[in-house]
Length: 478
Image (cartoon, rainbow, N blue to C red; front, top):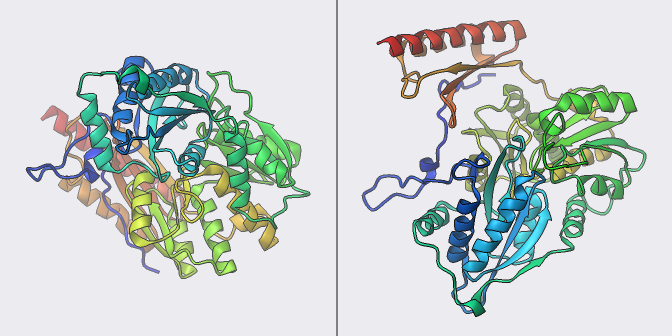
């Protein structure tokens, strides 16, 4: 089977999908990146004064034009700075004359769901996802529970340039707490697998990363009948993602083996990513989970079109799906681009190796709990263990080397590097892949090689990385 190779990947940026200006050039966003606004707490723009202004700007954009106030929901993960930013955003939204629904700690996909079902004008998520507590960020959802389109993000940024003003006192927004938010979301998650699924007799380790699923995920699996061993469920504001959750899967694997559990499930800090562990301690990433879900849908005769992955999706996923007759396509890294391609093609399955899996027929965004439930349904309904399902896809060895480069270095497209890539690809043959991808956030070029033999993959990745270092050094000296 011939496999097309991706030679060079570009890092997506905010301007890549922005609307054109009146002069035909892309309109560049000042604050919004591919996944909202994120950074170190206390450093601009992740500061209380900016969050106050951001809440006000969003309130102005989403304020009603038909006489009713409208409402914006605000939820957060468990990091300590969330309290501070929640208060600032609440004040800003209220100053713009919009009501607020406070959700407290809730998974990101739960906020998307609640925004849609509670008929809010928008949802705001305070989270830095899988990052440590020193970082935080803001994501927005539209009233339909999807990421904001570019024109709305541009509108919010335009309001940020204006001087903050407060509506008349009688028009100031009111804040109320949505007390049944967790219960609503738990029931929604259970509904995605139907009334017939029972997890009785299964022992599952659930690791919530001390993040926003800590009071949600254990209840979901318990109410479906499983015996749940919960860990990472004691958030203190500082321990989110710390040696726990999807970024530390070996911790989960060790616990699964120690408890002689049937499997384990781990989420990241805001609950939109998931990794799983079988009873032998093998870790399944997003590619493997996506394959299991796709294969089970084929078994059930459920139409999903095809599968969207990214430049980083394992070659084994592509070949495995193609062997089943399932179409597969790649996008730049980032769930935003995966989602755009899914909508464009009318497909309902997509995701990233990191564990961000999207079942668009069930949820409007990537959802760790729902993705885990879909994989569990495949286990139960297919009558096979997770370990058996895992072996149905042959994952290719993959080696990533990060090479530091100076800003402005012209590596991608350099003739020497192009020749080096061609040489590596010739040695890999048809069942191998090379990707050079500049980081979107730091002066690093990610060199990735994938193939059937692990030792060859490692050697070729280091060989190509050294060629990049040599060219970067020569450009710097020149």
